[in-house]
Image (cartoon, rainbow, N blue to C red; front, side, top):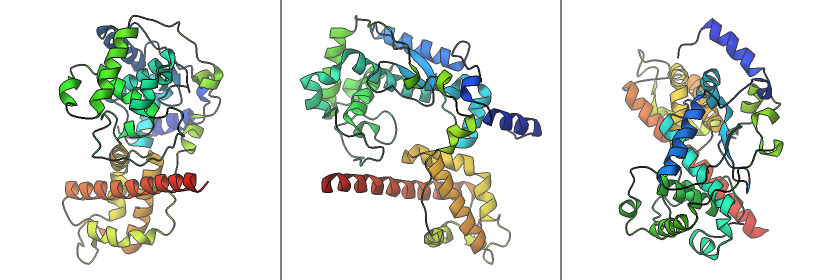
Length: 341
């Protein structure tokens, strides 16, 4: 969407307002329609439980509580636009439903305390295992389902269960065929049996407390919400000079080419969205990488020499590789520290 002076002024005003004072509501918003779709899918599966949904700071379930938090920006088109400018993209309905099915799995697990069953530990692992944001994953593993990108089921046993439930519930997906001869099939079959046992039970709904961060308790500003996005600690960005010279060309070799820093600025939103999507990283970390690359490209005087689309593909692949290495380095250090301690 094109930037205008009117939008820039409105954007500044919104960023300065407290989230709790925005008057956000699910009623009449896109979130209301998504919730209705989730409840329809649960009904089609014969599941009586309807996990309550509320607006919060991000997708999630409060620890151990059968509630679903949905990002507040999905309830207002203007806030969606700010999110899209920050993250490079906004969740479409299909992606939002993936998250809702996943969070419904968490809520169901907590409502029925399925993690306390002995079979849960045997199939998914120790529910009380430490939860690490940066985790090693095996892309070739057939012991876990594939639903959210980033091999998210491998993050923690609780996430493994939620992902398994999401796959089980996905309309039009025959999981018995999709996961035939996979180790993950045993988890799906166990879950299918559990759902036959509990599907007709509807626990009493809960209301979120201030500890669960409903929008009414979010007294910080919209700008503050984005200020804590984890950056990438790059250090000396000259380490990327060789990589940049492979993607771009020196000015003498492409005198008519677009300056690389201008190209990077023009495609920043798209690159942030693409790299964060494939690498499973936060947009703040990806954006800090891109801006460091832009500074080095300016210093080196680099220009675009190839096709625009080809350059975009190369930058996406390079950025994803950097973010994945960073992510796995974090996971390795965390695992090593745990062993040493």
